[in-house]
Image 1 (cartoon, helix red, strand yellow):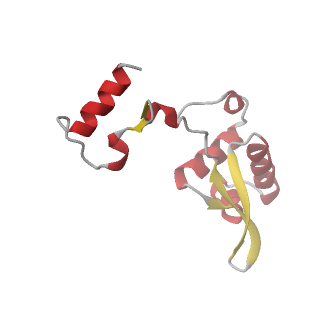
Image 2 (tube, helix red, strand yellow):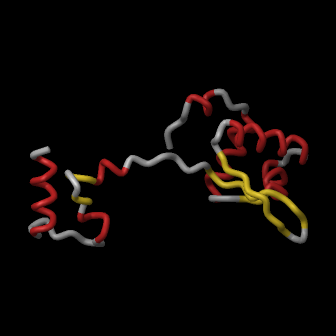
Length: 115
């Protein structure tokens, strides 16, 4: 995974927290600080910093009967134009297997080549 400029400035605790959130795909804040073996106050500071840098998303949740936050990795803007040839979407998007001799694939490649 690429490192953004914001990630270069992270403390060791922030790096560990971001790695935990990315590896798990999401974690409740009440478990986050325990997993990192830091105090709840330190955990909250880490979360606040990562959220401010837009590296994670935080949404309110109820977990084990308590109000907390669910922390997930931030979604990045994706460039779908790379899947396009003119106004045609790549046949690889819809089909599990694309026959390289198929008309759809050939037409897409030709459109891509002549853009």
